[in-house]
Length: 95
Image 1 (cartoon, rainbow, N blue to C red):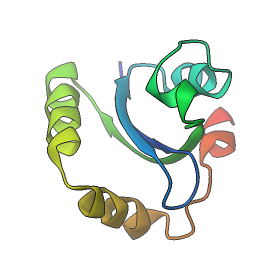
Image 2: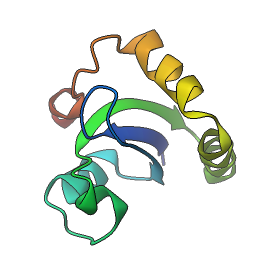
Image 3: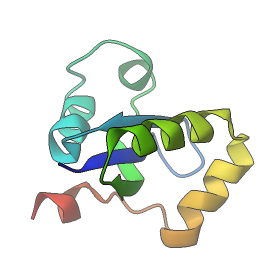
Image 4: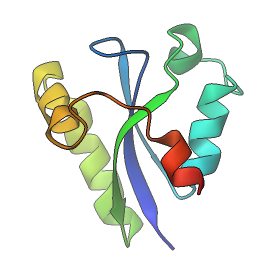
């Protein structure tokens, strides 16, 4: 089973959220339809702008915790390293 650490954004340089899941398509879809009330629904954080894949949950959880402690500027650099235009990657993972 794969585990994903991901970053969602409301827009370029907008609000961002770091999360973890074992089903990236389902989880991002839940954020997009605001299935769960909370931070992402409140701030309309629906665009998948970055993710990493892990083989085991311990590594994924460790990485998520690490990223949540990072400064915002570091997270932005991480996003822009692979996705400089902040494209929404959701459609590409649905294929």
